[in-house]
Length: 108
Image (tube, rainbow, N blue to C red):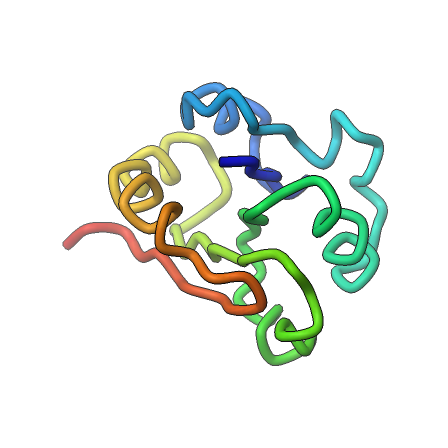
């Protein structure tokens, strides 16, 4: 599974995912790309984009892109707030469909 961690998320999240095919937008020099540009570039190299941008599905026509979007809905983008989402991220990633978005919320 090739996963791109958005620039708004801490780079340490990539390591915590434990996926060989993971990269960060910052590593690739993509931290300044707008959402449509990021989706366009990422679809050629990745299966899934992990952003925190809850508005992305409303702002972008995701069906145009050959990449799934898994939106993280944590209290903040601090690693401590994102770590509780890891089990659900790992559950959702294999089921994520290209051109669609799914949101992951913290456990209750």
